Image (cartoon, rainbow, N blue to C red; front, top):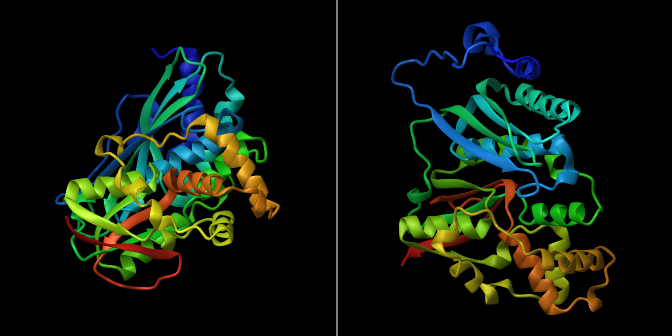
Length: 341
């Protein structure tokens, strides 16, 4: 017999589900029943989010839900797959507030409707932590018979990135120092689904991944797995506007600092990029000077610090891929070519 507290909590989850009786059994059981057609594959991805570690507490539970959702679904979209349903594991913090949980659920419900993806099960547990912790697993169907793995990159491929690089770090600085209440890009994250469709409609993709763990780390992973050399023109990165202004004004040649990419170690690849806290205030002050066009007050070292940290930081909805095609497509930038080591 489930206790009253858990039943109340499960009641909050029901709006996230679809075909409640047929698949989830109204969450009255520990299993969901899914009918999978023969000779059909599933693509599965899971991701976790820890309050204060992956997202600032001041962002709130709505932003938490959106970040968790897009960190997970970006793994699916970069593989040319259509998301179907998901499971959710939640670890409730000490003295949690149901209002915060309701906010979290409403945000997921809205995203589920937008992407036509629904909850089929999961687990809830109380934690001894004061931080909110959740993990999501998404199940998807591939849109073709290809497998777009990190190790699929080939010598001669062009290296491409979608979207804007560095916007995530700029927003992080602004939130951390009280300039923004939440991440501004989370209201526009649906663009990642459109970009995914654009990529696979126009390019013959050999390898693909998202860059929520940081651009340098993902390039290092592809280099390591494929035993290849990624010749990246850092000056060609589609940087966020404040960074573009800084690079142009200070006449910075980022390719002089290419060793930052080459020195990314293989064992760092799957670790979330960590920006040292003692650097964030200096980077934020540099950002403030950029916004007020006080470029003369910015040293070259300060300029390099904020630009390289922004490139290293994860951008949740960007897709990194390689292809033999050499094309110019809106919102997609060629940033280098691959050669043999």
